[in-house]
Length: 389
Ligand code: SF4
Ligand code: SF4
Image (cartoon, rainbow, N blue to C red; front, side, top):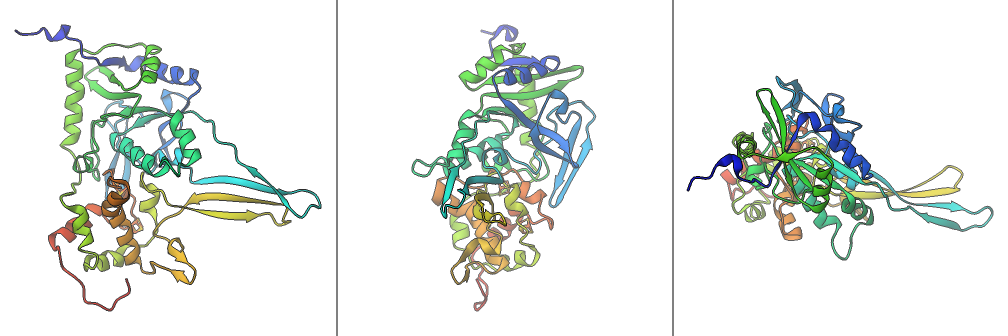
């Protein structure tokens, strides 16, 4: 029996572009601070948004190894770009965080320690890509471990409202298909949108992922999506799937890297790597940090701050007597083998979600997919001995 397609319920909804601004109001009414993409300093970054007018309407990005450019689109898409240098980790795992403060009490030789209150911000992340949802799940394993949960991350993460946006185009350095992390969000969101521009029509197909999402959607004008609208959305995501700028062969990846710790390719990449740490700063899953104690000049107050650190810095592996990873080669190898191999042993998942940021934002264009390919193509090659690890 042939069903009349127009009468079939899809379980998905449509918000017309003209009503999209109401989503901001619905979120704000519930106390959320909306953060999402906006154009700043020649890039699309994540920052506080006041209204729909702050979104990067009509902009897209062009990306390749060591290359990022904003370009005008020929249509008014709001989410017609890929990912920029920021990721959501900067909100949940802030780059600089005071942990406590201590003050001297008059002539008393001791200090009074004042712990920092937990943050009570309710973020609504607007425009979370599928690879970024996976990156959040990866960071959850790190920061929400049963025995050692990070209280700041936990407080912010539990309150965050996630509006995912399915990718309808892929970037030159994307490889989420290889990592099975995109381009369509499969879960872990409150609402997921797919933006459709079809001639004069501009709308968002919406999937509800949680009860909170359903409540918010009730406050935004919407209607049931027709099968044609759902098909239009799916077609665009499918198109993105076929546009990946990079691929990465994950077959036996852990064992491949473990048996190639002495491969000559590590020496080659170290010739180019500046050890600048850009790749770790932009990576949505990297989580290394350090703590610093700072006092004022009069010695009356002291504070401990946590700030992002990187396995590319010499000091990062400092133990009494010196650093363990003194060469750039050992630091690059540590980073890449952690992402693609030891992370699997440690957290049961890859540390890479295929977002491509480390490729785009590397000043010398080092490409993790190219490095892995080179090792795979000459699997088992070892260097002559005697050199510093
Ligand atoms: S290693 Fe590179 S491609 Fe993988 S998640 Fe990090 S920044 Fe993205
Ligand atoms: S791989 Fe590139 S981004 Fe990473 S530390 Fe080396 S030069 Fe910097």
